[in-house]
Image 1: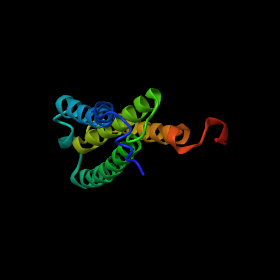
Image 2 (image 1 turned 180 degrees about the horizontal axis):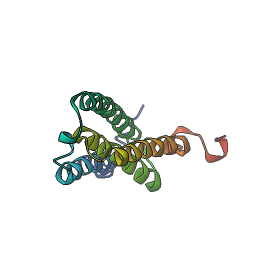
Image 3 (image 1 turned 30 degrees about the vertical axis):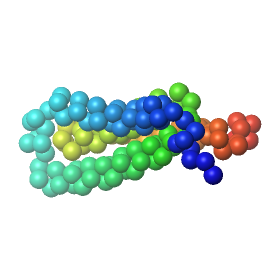
Image 4 (image 1 turned 90 degrees about the horizontal axis):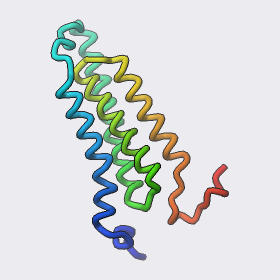
Length: 139
């Protein structure tokens, strides 16, 4: 059995894998750089502890999504799906950073759940060309 990594050039594979990771890191960096430093002081201690717990859960979900997307990108993928995967993970990562900072929680919720639904939709519609399944076999 041939390795799927051997079937494709290293540059294309690394580029595909770096796009979601780079997008997630860029989103987190932007949120940290542009975040509201006064936001944590506006939340009482009990609410802050609850939100930090939610942020921890969102971190685990985001890392899980990033791992699954990276696993999917080991195989050939259409550019539209690659962009959708990268934007979905970046939205989730940026939203998680917003919750960690306790700033813009409404926007963070929209971005996190929007990114999650984007990844679910992309995964539902994506067909791996090497799997033998065609678009006509999708329900």
